Structures are given as structure tokens and as C-alpha cells.
Image (spheres, rainbow, N blue to C red):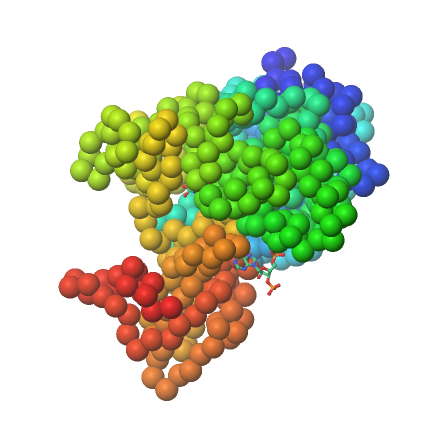
Length: 498
Ligand code: MLC
Ligand code: AMP
């Protein structure tokens, strides 16, 4: 029987450790066995899930990966959902994707059970199943890489997030490109502390590691002190994080006692590669990091729809403020606002890309899918310029997209939540520059008559409606919002109100 490539790779490393945490370790073979048991449980007697959507709500680690592999081995499409989302965000992901099944842990099942019952979604509790090979009942379907594998929800220029559909072949192309470019090997050890509903954690860290036979040390969340302790112990060869995390580590290094700082710096300096991405890494942070640790961060640029696109080189100049050149298998072109393809350097244009890693379509949104391609090239919505051989990101075409802490947020979704507040008549949300978070979610509001409002109560209001990282950090109350001649709110002018 032919196997999907991710599984064949796991078999090749069967006896190696895939995940570790404290004194617990799980081999690749254990993941394979557990996923077979879970796949049979998902199938519940059917021959093939035939691309049924299966939501996955689980913390990073062997349980998450066994469930992911189970969904794939049973022929389903995996929809990872955010652990810290609000119930209405979960409901949106489940209903928009048409999920009929949800795999989760016993600890999390109690939080989502009521919702699943209401929506008619069957729950599979992953840690209830036995984990021995002998329990794996029944044959699993034969699958080909053109099967759809995953739907990731990503915010954009629409109020609610869109589901990005990728096939096994897309994911494989994304992984192989990075494994080649960044010289992954079975000797690598990497910490995983990023959320498991976005590609940075799913593809760049976990899938590349497991493709290579490497070892992942998983954490439920990013806990600075714990991670630094492991760096001090020289536990890793590789490190991947968003710029906010590097900023937080720099702050910790600067305030550490000299001996502690020296041990941490030695830990970072011993790694073979440290990567930053998901948001712009300010050149000043890049330079500060080198000055502190001697390590030159490798900055790369990518997107949920495409996987990684541009990267500074593994060997060669890693230029602060630049994102390098196209990764293996990825084609890039710049297109100017007037529709010309840029042919030389120094002329800015929108980044467009194509290649085997690019997603199939947005789930159930044929119009948005068609609009996002230009003659077969995916339109990223990011502007860049080529300067002495390297691309530099200049910003986004849409002011309604915010990047905060590496999360992509839709200003429109946050505005919709604010407009439900009885005291708010109008509002405009945007991202303002912030040294730690990259951008801070900021709201300008016009109040209804005789109302008053403070940031604290706005944040409280949002807590039931939006994930924590979408909640406004700054608030300004104004008499009216600035508008252009057509009556449309002008966000660049809103910026000046703060
Ligand atoms: C959290 N807080 C924020 C915030 N997020 N404040 C301002 N802006 C934000 N964005 C606040 C919380 O409300 C809380 O406040 C305090 O910070 C601590 O919250 P936390 O959740 O514990 O924060 P922390 O764990 O420190 O989170 C920081 C982080 C996290 C950087 C670890 O944001 C993160 O994991 N980001 C990565 C996201 C990611 O993986 N993106 C990749 C997308 S894929 P209080 O008052 O309660 O203490 C992609 C493609 C590509 O982009 O190219 O990779
Ligand atoms: P997401 O939709 O969450 O996958 O986020 C993708 C977006 O993150 C891109 O379109 C960029 O706007 C941004 N991004 C990712 N990496 C970088 C980077 N290195 N520099 C600037 N922006 C980045």
C-alpha cells in the first residue's frame, strides 16, 4: 500500500524521538500507532472520510500530531482551531467549514461539548483511546497527495476570517522547500511554543521537524522563563519565533544578572539557526540581537495561503530589514499599481507568487478565490521592492489588516464587535506602531448621545466576542471620524487622532 509522504517519512524515523517534554518522550512509531487507532475511531466503520471536515482543538504535542495524522489517514480535512478563541469564534469556524467531527482532549472537551451538541458535531476524545498498535482496527483508505488536507482560518480584508484550503501536495511542497533551504536534519532539536492554528507552528516548526526526523520540545504556550531555562541548558539547535518574542527576549537579556546573561547568550550562540518571521523584524531589533548574542537572525516572509515565499540565505548575507530571495520552488514577481510587471530593482510593487505550495482556494468562496489570483499568480497584498538582490517589504495594500504579535487581524472584524456596544455609534480600528507587538490594535470611537466609555470597559466588552490578541490596546473618543469627499472614513487621518 502506498502511503502519504508524511507517513512514509515518519516510518523512516520510527525509533527516533519526535516529541519530548520534561521526562516524557514519544517516538515516531508511537505517533504512527496512536494515529491509526484514532483514524479508525474517526471512521467509525466507514471506508473513507472523503474530505469530511474534522476540527482539531488540542495543545501542541504528540496528541495534536497523532490526531492530525489520524484525520489525514482517515481521509478527512483538518481544521485546527484556536485554543483561546471565544465560543462564537469556535462556532464560526465549525459552521463555516461544515465540520461534522471534532478531535480534542478530555480537558478541552468539556469546554466545547455544549457547542458541539448544539451544532451536531461528533466529538472524539483523543486521550480516551488506547495507544497500542493492536487496538488499531480496520483498514485505512488509500489516499493520493491531491487530497485536500487542511483548512486554516485567516483574517483579511473581509470581516470574518476565510478558510485557506491546502492539499497534501501543497503542504509537502511548503515543507520540502524549507527543509532544503534551512538544512534541516534528524539531528535538529527545536522548541515549539507557537499556536497550533497557524502555519508558523504547524508547518515551519512541527511539519519540517517531523519530515526530517528531528525532535520537537513542545510547550502549551510561550513562557519566557521556561524557554530561557532550556536555552541556557543548550537544548536546541534551531529556534523559530515571531519578532515580538525576540523583543521580549532582548528585554530579558538586558535585565539579567551578568552570569545569567552570559549563560543565555552562550545558549543562543550555540544554535545553528535562529529564524524570525510572521511580521516585520525591525532592522534595529535584528542588529540588537546580533550585538547581544553574536547570532544573525534569518528573516523570512510568508503567508498562510502560500507557505514561505522569501528568505534570507542560510549561508551568505542576512540583511537587517530585508527578507531575501525566493525559496526553492517559489516564483515571485512584483506588479506596480498601474499593472506593470517590475523588471529591475528599486521599483516597488505588490508581491505576487506561484508555485506548488500555493493553496487551492478559499473554502466556499469562489469569488474571493478568483479575485486573489492574477493570471495564475497569487496576490499577497504586500508591497515590496528589490534592492541589491534582496526583497524588502514596504507594507500592506490594505489598512484593514493588522499584524500584532505575529497574528493577522481584520480591523473590520474588531469594528463589528465594537459596533455591537450600545454606547458606540461609529468606530474605526487600525494598527499603530508598537515596539513590542509590531502593531497595537487601536480604536477611535464616536459615542451615542450622553454616553461615556473607557478603554477598560471596551476591553471587557470585547472579551466575550474576540480572542485576547484582537482586543483594542488603545482607545480614543472623538466627536466625528475623518471622512473623504465620498463620505468614507479615511484611516490615515484616523491615525493622527491618537
Ligand atoms: C496578548 N497581549 C497583547 C497582545 N497579545 N497585548 C497587545 N497586543 C497583542 N497582540 C496581552 C494579553 O492581553 C496579556 O495582557 C499579556 O499580553 C500576555 O498575554 P499572553 O497571551 O500570555 O501573551 P504572550 O504569551 O506573551 O503572547 C505573545 C506571543 C503570542 C508573541 C507568544 O502573541 C504568539 O504566540 N504570537 C505568535 C502568533 C503566530 O504564530 N503567528 C503566525 C501566523 S502565520 P494582560 O493584561 O492580561 O497581562 C503567519 C505566516 C508566517 O503569519 O509568515 O509565518
Ligand atoms: P498570515 O495571513 O497570518 O499568514 O500572515 C501573512 C502576512 O504576514 C503577510 O502577508 C505579511 O503581511 C506578514 N509577514 C509575514 N512575514 C513577514 C516579514 N518577515 N516581514 C513583514 N511582514 C511579514
